Amino acid sequence: MDFTFTEEQQAAAEAARGVFAGVAPDAVPSPALTPGAVADDFDRPLWGRLADADLLSLLLAEEYGGAGLDAIALCLVLRESAKVLARVPLLESSAATAAVQAYGGPELKAELLARAGRGEVVLTVAAHGRTGHDPAELAVTARQDGSGWVLDGVQTAVPWAYDADLVVVPARTAADRTVLALVPRDAEGVSLGEQFSTSGERLGELRLESVRLAVRDVIDAEGAWEWLRELLATGTCALALGLGERVLGMTSQYASKREQFGHPIATFQAVAVQSADRYIDLRAMEAALWQAAWRIASGASGALPASGDVAVAKIWASEGVRRIVQTAQHLHGGFGADVDYPLHRYHAWAKHLELALGPAAAHEEALGDLLAAHPLA
Image (cartoon, rainbow, N blue to C red; front, side, top):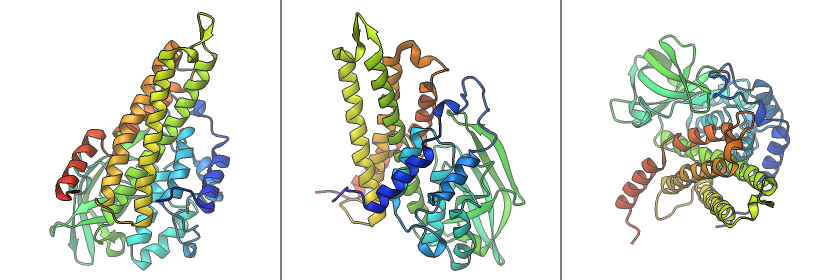
């Protein structure tokens, strides 16, 4: 396979670097100092700049005002966003609109996609189930009732739930199928319970009590939820990669300037070896990420389904980003714990990304099940 990025993909990454250039991680409120301070809303001005740069419509077809690019381009942009801890629902909204484009009906696509690409409608996804440890598609039930659908259940830790216009909710039918329901945040029967992530962001426990939706707002297509879940997981890996790259860069700069015994600590063998190990983590995270993104973008077949590559990428992302921030804290010493320095914010976000959509152990178990079902020999 060829991991050389196309001109269009490189242009998307370059545009993202331009948009995010003015975003300072130091400006992200610290949950250690001001709990809940980042919960009011996401960064709306930045969201507007992303829309102006056509970065909210990367995956949309030209007929909806999009660039017609793929998961690789989205991951390149997400990678840049994580370097500055950009507080926008870029992954969730982009993935949700892509799922609507791929699996939704003509009426829903005509009504929603162009507006979402312009940033006028914000989507998020309920992907963590009732407890965060059980399958998301089993947390909510969907049944047809007359000319519409009725949803009941609870989804936990929904990102941007208080700020999004629509929440994409996987739900199980009596026929044991999974549908995707686009639930308006202010629909009758919808309520939110306040929760907080390790990064300090406000999440929502989404409670659905006999929520009625029109037929057009429910996507009943085989494979839609699995595809969306894999895109979300791969995008999370891109965020972890960008964050890890930024943190290793901060550590390198600090170790090159911090002196002990008259020499920069970067010249000490123990420091150099730890930094080298973390660089290896980054390169492994990157290779696994692009493999997964390429499988999703191309639909290429392999010895295992694409979910196998996604699981490998998430395993490396979860373990790698944890090791990177821990080493960074260690090598920074007491300075790394200073809340006036942004490293602690990256550490908090890294822990959230490590556990989002399942920690490494959960994906190792899923990969084991895939290998059992698809012997490689």
